[in-house]
Length: 260
Image (cartoon, rainbow, N blue to C red; front, top):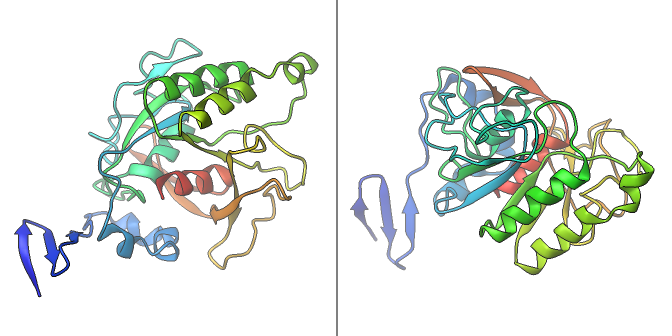
């Protein structure tokens, strides 16, 4: 038996609260094959990310996008004087935010895997890739401010000898892990086995990308340092200004893991 607890929620005989499955008006949700593969509708009966704020180390997130209204809280910029991170000149962060916490309320909207979670932008790259020193600041800030999940849809090898010698980012990762923070990072899109960072640091969940058939994406990194695979091919996501796009990469796969 079960009885009505409140609008849109049910309580089972065992006392477990069952949440209403999101019912967005979005036509675009039919394009989100990843939600089906991840069995999102089953998971949403029990949790939709309520009470969780994800630290998004990226280019910011467009808080005015129809699928992100109310989902993005004022964040912090560590580079490019980007204010509080609620705007996004690049677009990458907005896409990741929608995969994690999109509400699916736009005309062609994106429904995130955790549609009741919130996003705290930690701006480290308005354009291009950040240096590890900037990311280190963002990681430590997130740990100091109580975030329990950090999404880093960024990666790279240490091509700069000076940066390769500096282990600030590694120390920041270790600090966050000691404070019970889950760090999820993209393995990279070079199609090689070369370790990319911060994904390859011990304790970080390094994410590679697979397609809708579960096959590895041709350009995804691989190797024993990779932790898990997630949907990352032909992923429909939000773009700044209320628009949408479809793309592939370990960045999107990382966002899905962070939302899990």
